[in-house]
Length: 302
Image (cartoon, rainbow, N blue to C red; front, side, top):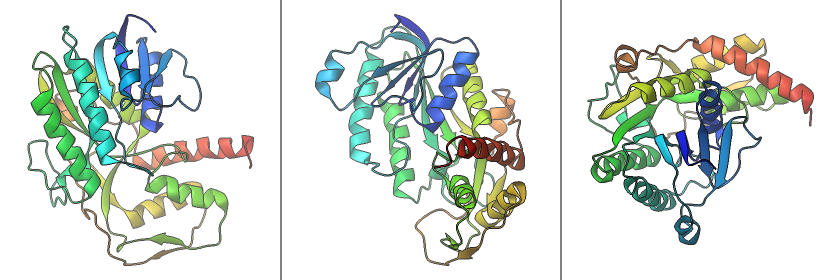
């Protein structure tokens, strides 16, 4: 571990963290991943330190290196997600950051789900109307950071749209593609009416967008990391099948779901203030994901 890094990723061993760390390292940054578990594979140019931020003994013996930026990636939804555990880790992390006397940029990865239903593309200044418990938790974390992060640091709240790009990750696109890869004859179930809208961003674009915000962030700001285009679950199914040249039997269950049905967000601030426009269309991202996923399956058929 070095005395100083360009970027420290808190929870950088997951899907987004590994891709972001690799991207930053390729641009010449010195990157440190601080996480409970190591990444699936070592990343060139990314140092790793195992830390469980709920383990006070481990935290007490850990010295946070100096860094220009800290990107907080913990608390992503998934099996075993525990809001209270995330709150405890969040408080510990902010205490460590506030102990740093040098100015740092702190970027927190939230979600566009905090807006709830939006008939028109939600802008960063719009009121939050989170519906899902996960989205409400993220909104709570945003508020905590705004109140408790030392004012000598700069704060960037990054509201991420649905990220895709690897079948080993979570998300609707991964579920669909994994079912196609499995050649299963069982019908794929889509809960709700299938018209739920989401904004989907390819992982490479997400990493580049975060890097652009990090480079230009001054003071405190909130930024939608999104494409500005929403599509329904049924249309996602159609695009994935078309790109993969495979048919997938599915059924729309019409079972009620506790979630926002229309996530529409604006990415104008990302474009106008931070100079980034996603490079890939949804279909292009799906095609790259399909190529990558088929290569993995051929190398690891079982």
